[in-house]
Length: 443
Image (tube, rainbow, N blue to C red):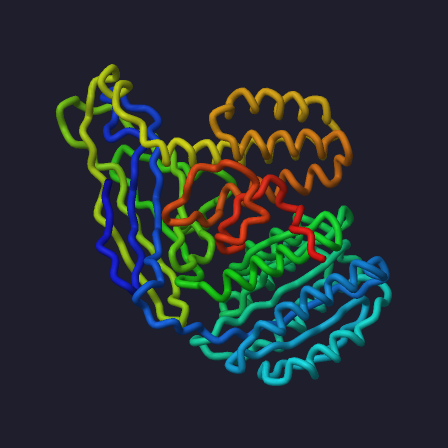
């Protein structure tokens, strides 16, 4: 294992192989790149100011319980902001309303009163609603976290609707320091658009099957924002000659080889699973595999640049290599990456109306992952959803695959025993849920 020496203000970067060695015959060898944040204990409890634009879909389909629950979620965030924070609240249908222009979060009651006046309207100009939220945050300082939180229950059917053009705008605002997290609701929203917007703009993505499920996404987002250690985190594997690195799961590198990961919270870890394709080489030597570069911003906007030297492991005969100890954590997270890819394949089958083939794929996977209770539980929920509603099943497949591909884990994560959705002992962003679209029930 190759690792850095962390400080209270820098993460620990490790490269951990599945087996500590490579076969002289060459072939595929898996490794985990892990970025671990320090615990907050012993560090002054200071939170970076938040600048939030809360953008609510108020189109006609949101009338009734969906809009009321969305407003409750926004109120939940507002009441937990501090005087150093700023907030704007916007509502959109085919026109944009700004009941709360960006302002310091001093008077919660005045902001809440404005939110309660929002009523449902017409069609869905999602892009303009989101863009106006980004404009509210323009001109902020790097020492604050500027984020749009966008809610929609439908398709963009007014104004700019081309997804790729919208993604380009998201990336442009990210370059200005403004990120976006998205929350989808129900069975009618465009999950590819909502996930794509969040991915292009450095944010998170959530969804709720029903209005009651919305709260968890907002709660998870606020919990993460209040605990940020590093943001805009990305890593670049630098392979040695004769080695090719293949990222696993649904995370893809950009044109320059940088792989974006989730924002990193205090006391948590982000990770990237790689399959290294290694050329054959003489036994009895050391093989240099890969080094890792990291770039990120601290919670106060400072640039963080780190690197670790190449991981070197012994070259063994194929028989001796096969006999090596397997790292249990690496093996478990490789299973998560494999599940993500399998879930994505199942979703493509469903969208091609090959539902029976998707069912067969999920059933076969339960045997493959029988020693991974979290994955088995997710597969069982996906199978049940597929029987009930193929549209919601498709959404759950995407969000479950993305969760497995770029989640945060507790630095001392225990084995999965049961659905952690109702847990009050861990931050919301660390809970392992059996259904990403299902939230805790509130009174």
